[in-house]
Image (cartoon, rainbow, N blue to C red):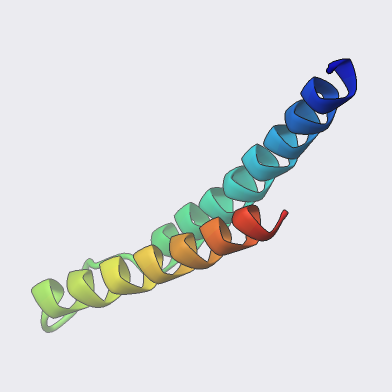
Length: 66
């Protein structure tokens, strides 16, 4: 049973690391492409949100595979 707990803990740490890395990249990209001075900020925000959720879903899929 100890082995199962250790493997589960290791998998959890890997999943946390994947999500932390992806979120760090997303925040960096979001700051780089600020909504300031955009002609259609609402449309831009929707595109950013759709892209962000899509990337997070892909990160979640990678976590499930792990």
